[in-house]
Image (cartoon, rainbow, N blue to C red; front, side, top):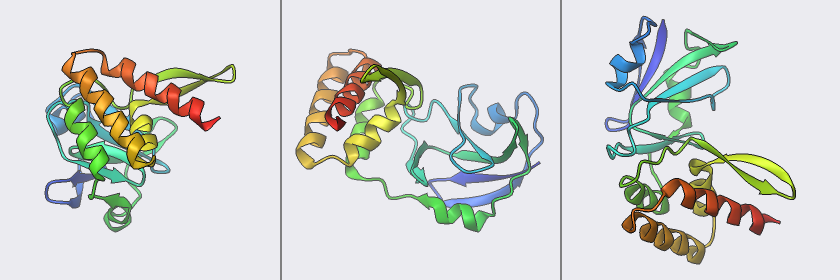
Length: 181
């Protein structure tokens, strides 16, 4: 199967040939914990779920925050298939420069057991919304300096006290939703 591999350290996108088996992603990432995103149309992005705690490089594919190496495959009806996006097209979607807010937040979160992509519920006017910690980081990154500083200071307190980073992120998501009206 034709796939693309992203290495954020070398900043290269390379075509690779893989054989999809039960252990393919384990072999690629040396991990059984894999995150999966579908932020590229008709494709799936696989990434190592341990990348945060292992301080792997952060970057963006479009607006999707990814940590560490990534494996890109085509996707149709929940089945993996040959990739159809070219390395050049994929490269044009990647941004290796990560804002300072993200760098600081990720450095703090490395000390937690948080999965950035696991969803949780918040409520807006009686409606339940599913959000993730990645969404929280995105939202606070676009806030003003004072709000970003508040977020980082409170996150540092949570991490230092060894409290739940997931509960903190859910609380911050609810605050952001409430502020949005």
